[in-house]
Length: 638
Image (cartoon, rainbow, N blue to C red; front, side, top):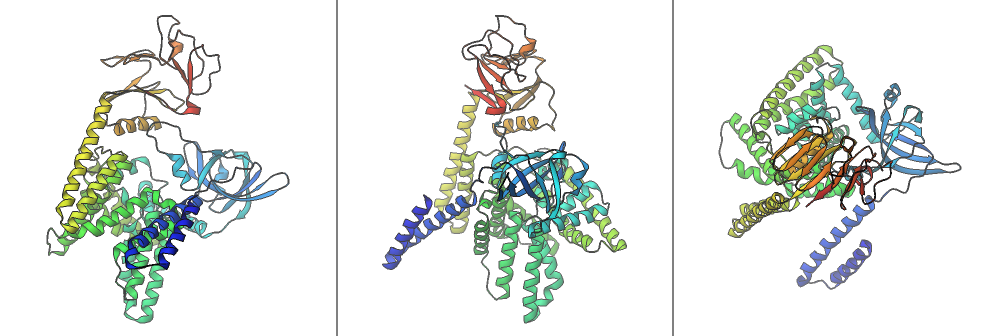
């Protein structure tokens, strides 16, 4: 359909061009813009075509990533390139998520290894719990639609190895990671150094991620423009003399661009690295052919090129944050830095560092609050610590890789790297422990739009000094406040029951600004469900959360709980009907029995039985069923 619309607009554009005059220039520009949007939409549609239905048979696939150890399995990604049925060999190219059963054979799997198996892949589905991360959509943007679990005897190595540039990059990165591990600088220190210099974050433990995220320094562990800039300036410092001669200038351009893109390959080609490398490449070329590079045009050109290659980059959080941060730095940092004149070199460096941090934080705040629902209060302190440290650690990390075969030099560099990382981690841990280091800041979609419109109005005012933009900014601020107050009013008068899609029984009762989470056993902060409960509290802006177990006794103005029987805002809920004596005095509205063994009770007309799997016994007449494994979480509100 979009193709036909684009053809019509192309015809109109040709007619306008044929009879073009000055008065038609707005029409010509408008149609051109519409065509660009249409071509973008068509490209997106074609890029995200669903794979054909999978044919069962013997499948040959290539391992794309080094298997990563999980609690009960090893996780990786496969590229299925052929399927052999009884009499046909079908060529295909589909990426699937794979989980291998734990055994010693996994150590033989490397990027590029080919395996064969017959296990059919299953579609990836979300659990359907409220506010959970949309893992299915996240993988679809990476062209992964199915997953497969392979037991030890269900797959076999063929002995063939595929070699492509991306697989070479993954193999090279594995070898570089092995060099880091051989230096014995410490497990945590190696994980941080690997993320900082090679973009390898799979081994980072939850505690390290929490400390860096809460302190507002997580961006340092995600290889981005900062890291590419440090690599480029280190190269310029060493080889800048080449620009003094004509041939040397050509050599400088070729070497610097090659280095940047090699760095991008071994760090995983993330959107932020691709953006930075594309921008630096354009700036280097422009600077060496005596062309003045307009940073906004360079920014737009790099985005255009990346979206041509992969339209899904537009929906990558890293892509969005990266461009917002660069725009904020380019547009706001000179204005912030101009507020105070510093003549001392050390003071100027510190002030520039602070102004860059503030500019980037202002620009990325709306998206950070929308996606991560928190604000790092002490981000200035963290950046003063981590950015100078990164400027030291990235060259030292590269030096450690380059001189790993020289024992004395390698051990000296490793010693310096180890203690820099230890000091940085200690300082970030201290900052993260400060009071109110990461307050919850929640923005829902309408609120995000209001905040973006407010910031855009302020930016326009700074550029034009027109009072109209201040008035529009104030209007959007009033609309934002009004929407938040209205949402809060609706929440105060709302009651809700949520039964999570999980094999263990977890039920949430929500009334006004408080929530009660009831589980069979005490929830641990490491549990998936515990995080989900906290997400609901944060995203609904609730002020009180009470954790209870189903066999406990509790009573307040909103909830009565006594050993498996709960009464909440006029609703009676059986949390464990097996422990309730069969009596006609209990008429439940909701029966939660995940085992599926329903115990007959007298029920009301609106009673609902919630099970994880379909009930194995006949359900009493009049009782509706909600099967969590098939229908997702149960949510009832009134």
